[in-house]
Length: 127
Image 1 (spheres, rainbow, N blue to C red):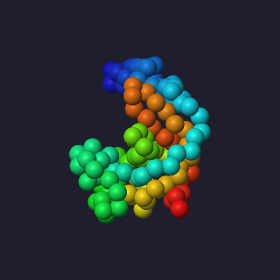
Image 2 (cartoon, one colour):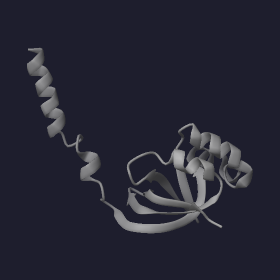
Image 3 (cartoon, rainbow, N blue to C red):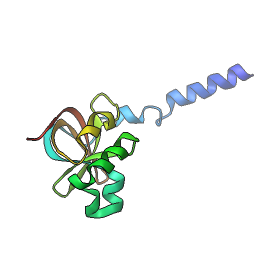
Image 4 (cartoon, helix red, strand yellow):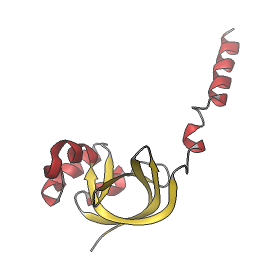
């Protein structure tokens, strides 16, 4: 009975629309490869501390927050782009050393329900 129940659960998960959601939706709202230039921010401080959560004076805190796994984004003008890497890994490790600095990133920009994300393929500090 346990084998039948286990098999049924696996079959339901495989057939479930939730199981394939991430990749079926992959690319929905994507606008192709783009280059963005903006500040690397930790989202928590940006949203909770206002202007004090931005800029070089906040760099040490931003780096600590990004290194601890809090969400990281690129702020371009008035738009915030949540950041991930194009290979589906978190951008934290790659972006932490650029906290509170201007960077130029290249990647696929996606938008859904008012949220923006960039899946980064390249990052460099802006001179």
